[in-house]
Image 1 (spheres, helix red, strand yellow):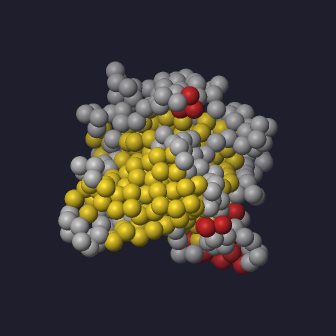
Image 2: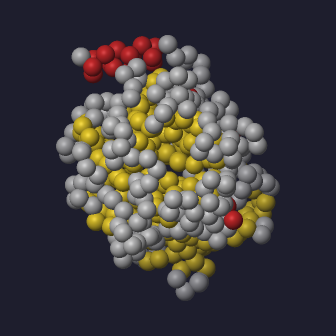
Image 3: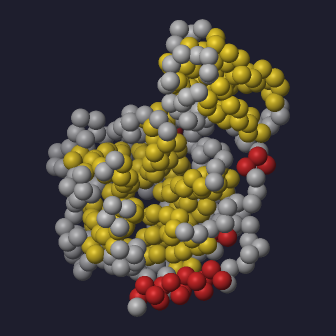
Length: 426
């Protein structure tokens, strides 16, 4: 009966939404049976349930969730739960990933993000000392999502950066598999977490272990106006790529972790240039309820024509809730969003045969050249050599007459220069 009741609630909530809304997905309806995953008793290892990741396992026809849990503050451990409908969850009694004494992650294992590729589970997680200074990201794998092996050869795989905005540490990431590798959006902070500002950065990787930061555009999302709902912190990105547009839900706060925390939305044509939604925040605490103080988006899935958000909320302690929203694509064309930075995207597909597409952006009228070179530095072809107005452009490159191999394409626009590698496989 619980599932039928939820379906009725979902249908009614969809019917009452205004069809004139430009972004219908800002109208989130919280499930009336929340919380859907409740905490353990006082003093238990899972008293506070926070920072979860949900995926759907088609092989077993079930939803799986990994979450951080603690009896108080430290240590944090990773727990596991499963569900047939995403609403009623069966929590495993013991944690599935714990800190290792005497190592870089001895104090905490938290902020898990999990994907499943070719039957293998891959987890990126965060760890730090109790003051959160110099937080880093680690990597682990599992054949079943329960028995995990940490990558001790490479861990931590991602640490603080050299720029001030992420010199204090990195954490809370979202990893997206793409052709030829992975994209990651992650949280960086300036100093020890309690005192610094939080930003969202972007990096890419061929193997999910060695990452290359976007040194031109980072951070790709910054706090808003001082005193506003996100005036100090933006963090915990959750990203979907739908119909050639990126959607990011993120947490925001004006003071920090001890203040009101809400959820915002931003969109991007390339995952780098983000436009925040004018109606932010899109999800807020419900005063006097179990999530009355803070809400943070844990995981979002597009199921049919609806978005499902599993979020962790706090009143006196953290638990997990569910909210839904009818999904309607952004009606403003990507091309009308004027970029604010120069950028050159990775070609797609990559590897490719015989043609591939290259997208780039310029924020102002600029003379633009795009050249292709072989591995010896010989110029193969000039793809663009003209003045371009501000905008985002895409071109197709056909390589029918060229042999297989590694090639490089380079964008020059004023003082901006960016070069990327692509692979032709015939």
